[in-house]
Image (tube, rainbow, N blue to C red):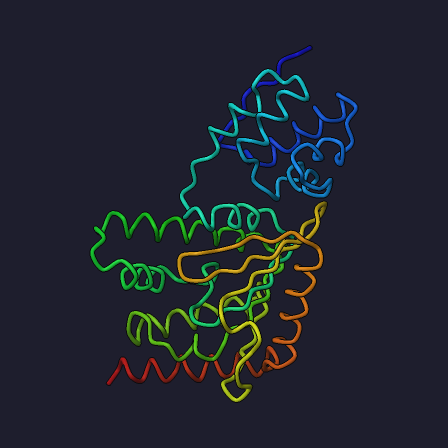
Length: 279
């Protein structure tokens, strides 16, 4: 049997690891359900690993090497790819985000990371880490802005963001930073790269107000949802749970202003910040 080569980490390592898993599984004659059963995971989860939308953990890698006879290939590469520039609670979600065909996000407090400007991101990190060195803050900002490269492609992914009005009104980094951040969002929307809605204060307390919600769809894998709070995050793949989160997002969208009305409100708030800066 030809021994698989270790992966090149400069490419898309998780997608390559998933493709090798599919190849090794089919060569060994296992179904996705049969391969996942000893790990107490579903066949759809194995499919997500093969599609590159979920991270392969070390215990899974060891099982695959033993079951599929891959001579430590998955264990070696799993260890090599375990390091991430993102916090542990967000690393897997960030990796899934990079291969999603559609991302729908509700932000109750801050501008979503994919839509942040350098100045806004720096202010967020500095306020959350007042004693961190400038080098640490710079690394965090670079990692966050790197995620936004997926918006440079003129087509995928679809990004649909619902912003609570508090996101617009909370002054992060000062008037100039806020004006630039809001103009950045309206610019993306007017270039038809993102869809943005604002959930106004008059709508009361939305059901998802306790934290941010991100929904991700994929070309060849089931959808995922990600819930994030202060220093915590949880990626969900259970179909009923994801469906409940999708309903919550749909209800938020139904209560929000239309995209046209939302852009008008964002422009108005940005103009107020610009006037504050001039004063």
